[in-house]
Length: 282
Image (cartoon, rainbow, N blue to C red; front, side, top):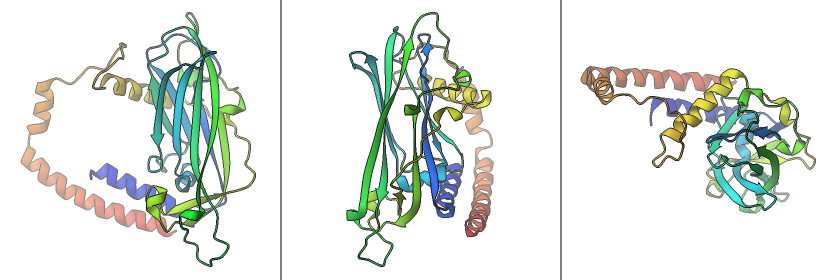
């Protein structure tokens, strides 16, 4: 495992341990909004998970599709399992993908379904650990309507409207988290969230992307589209590094760099373990 991945995993594990309940979590569609946009070869789809550490025991799964109105014909779809995919060191956590199917004028609908776990305590047991009979999965489906038209505003993540319908989000009250005995049945997570009977109203448009975050997301989506094995994206791509530069970077001082890097990584791992142990102890 690379050092960044290890540190990230340790930090995420710590966040899961340190999370306190009750807690409120929220899922929002940040982009697109219920507006009209110019045709584009790369439409961002940006989703937000607020209070990200408290999402961990809910093992969320996000599915989305884009459909033509009024026929309901599918033009694009995708799914992301976020049981281990939410970065709890970032709040809110933004999950973003893109669609290259919105170059034609018309009315569209982004349909999303979020599946999330819920568990109930065993009334006949004094133990907190749950078996499969007390683990459940709920889901919520909703949609955002938008249009594509020539001459309309260009896609701009930072300029999204501050008003939008409530169906662009959902919120949950997590009362506590219980231990799971059969982790294989819970995507190898060892905790399960207990949801309240009544859920709060979401505030999806209270979340705005600043210019820096919008630029970072746009750059990441462009880079991903340009590096796809069989790219359909026809827009501008960042320049690729030349072969000579890449080779020189890889080979210069290889033996020394490898030894120094290995020693440095070992020291950093030790420091990281100590640091995260201290943080988790509070």
